[in-house]
Amino acid sequence: MGITLLLKICNFLLFLMLCMIHGNFGRDIPKGDEMNIEVAYEKGDDHLCLNHAHDNDDGCHKKMIHNFHQHMHDHTSSSSSSHMGHMDLSWNIFFHIDDLKVGKKIPLYFPTKNSSITPHMISKQEAKLIPFSSTQLPKILEFFSFHQDSPQAKAIKNTLVHCELPPLIGETKFCATSLESMLDNLGQIFGLSNNFKVLTTTQLKKLVPNLQNYTILEDPKEIFGTKIVGCHPVPYPYAVYYCHGQVNDNRLFMISLEGEKDGQRVEAVAMCHMDTSQWDPHHASFRVLGIEPGVAPVCHVFPQDNLVWVSSPASAS
Image 1 (cartoon, rainbow, N blue to C red):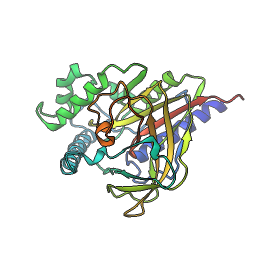
Image 2: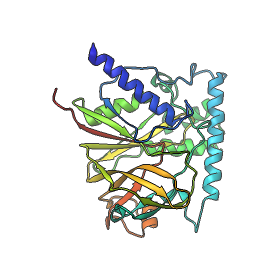
Image 3: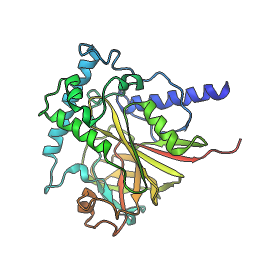
Image 4: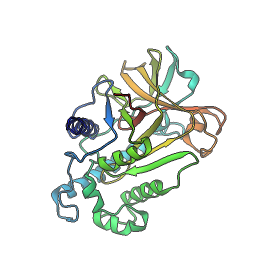
């Protein structure tokens, strides 16, 4: 009975964290936020958006579609105006592993998001009522009232295709359409005998998007785990996360940064991929760092709305 109560508390705390990430409570995640989450999952009070997902006249459904329109508009406007020498500002998340030292300055860009229009999570039961497959694209577009040639339709199609691509050798991947499905998949990857925690990039005050040099203030703290899975939000009318992890030798760090221009303090989660030999040669990281696949490790910081899950063996009772 005590274990069941603990699981409910842990899952509720996780839900609160995800709500804050998606702007449901209009506040930032506290510095250094991380939670120990038991793999076992019991259904909790997930954020319900589509109370009647099959009903196109549902008010929340209309609001979700409106928010996705606005979210796509902001994303497109930002992307089209944020090129500098034909390089998107959002690419400025990559750095070399040799940069991980106190006093090193790294040019980075941390994008911000408008939480009022960010797609929110829906429950597993609601997600089941909406097709999530490229073979069902016409039905999906009809459900959300998007024209097949619209930017929103293109974004939905790209997300579905990306989610359906086969994994690389040694890679585990899935797309989570709800909190429950995310935890279900993580439980299968990490194993029922393991505990895991989630890490996020956080800031000490409201972050202003600004490409600038960030100085590493302290020795980076390496986070050790038996398995690591990163989850990235992808464009969709409701919150969908693309999650993946590889068996090869990746290294995870927490780094304390300070912006050179505005003094912005960021506690960033950073990953170093030690083997990039299988990566697409046109991957943005190679262009930013001036290297080729397999030549050297590629490191990057995670944006604030990304989740990084780390597992470790359960301690003996």
